[in-house]
Amino acid sequence: MSITISSSPAYRSFVGNPVRFSLLTDSEQPLSCSLTIAGQVIYNFTHVPFQGVCQFDIADILTAYIDTPILESSQTDIVTPIRQGYTVYYTLTVTTGVESETVTFNGIAFRGGISKRLMRELQGKGLDMFSYRLSNPQRQFFFTTRTNGRNIRIRENEIAPLLFLAPVASMTFVTDSGRLITLTGLATQTLYALNIPAMRKTIFDTYNELPAYFSLLISDHYVCDITLLPATSAIEHNVLLFRNSLGTYERITLDAASTRTFESSDDDQDSYTLFDPQTSGYVTGYFRLPVTTVRATETGIKPPSEFMFLADLLSSDDVYLLIPGQSAIPVHVTADKYQLPGTSTEPVSISVTIRAIESDAYYSPEADFNLPSNRFGEWIFEDKYLNSWGIIYNDRRLIEP
Image 1: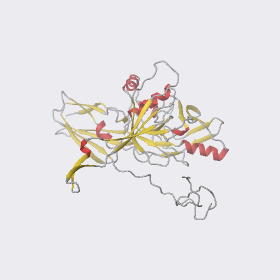
Image 2 (image 1 turned 60 degrees about the vertical axis):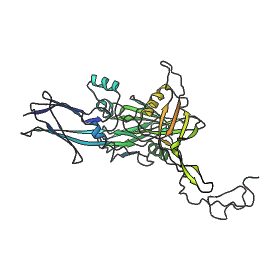
Image 3 (image 1 turned 45 degrees about the vertical axis):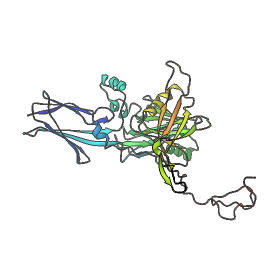
């Protein structure tokens, strides 16, 4: 009896796309398959050949074992290795019946996926997403969906760690004024996070310059560049953190005023009838009603290129609204009418709805872990001062009747 793997995914693959295997065998007996992660068999299954062929997809199984923790930008480390999450190393072992001939396949699975259109285009050129870009030192290799091109443009209030697989052991960033930051000792094909705030701080502390442009060089050859744009001037900024199609987290800002609506149920099931001994009759009582916060806003004026990035947000399965001083709020973002002119290059704005995915029947103010900002007696003669202890320092009222 013989068994061979006739087709398989690449060594690195996304679980959002099929991780499909096709095997050829001359055995009519069921094939025994096992999937091993971190030295432990996590899934066993059998597959009966049909006309000498077995085909199966393990993407859904691998998805459950890939965690994607949210990373915070470091102010000190320009690059930080990703020591857990985002990937899973696996081994597929397939064994025939009586003679127990075995074949194995080792691979790395990443969270996320690419579009069918891009998949078709890359396969036509004999490439996958990693050989095309993400593991290619000659192309822009960051796990961003802002662009597949060489020019990455990020607004300053949208900066988040940029994940990448180090294609080489050393690389150099050059600012627009010629300042250099060289990264050495990188473990090739290891996942890292690039912390742009730490790069800017390094340049600022050394040269008293705050760069807004970085060009990336590998072996003195230009690879790509990162341009930081000023935040858009607006009354309100709704900053959203979302898991992009490549499985990492990016930020996008909706620069427009929003209105909040607190939605609650008016279902009859929220009420009940109880006996009132004072009236010797029955009265209606109510349970506490879960309330859902809904924000209606707009994207703000953005160029068409940024709206394609917004489309990734609308498809995301993990989105958070970031409010300064508060914990991240898990939300779901929708657009009632996501419509763009087919050929227009003029900036436009689109209405969106940000709905909290959690409803709560109980209200709690934000936790305050701050220590008192003042001691008793300070600023005691100042008018209209109220410290964090809640002490008014003079006998004048803060609000006149």
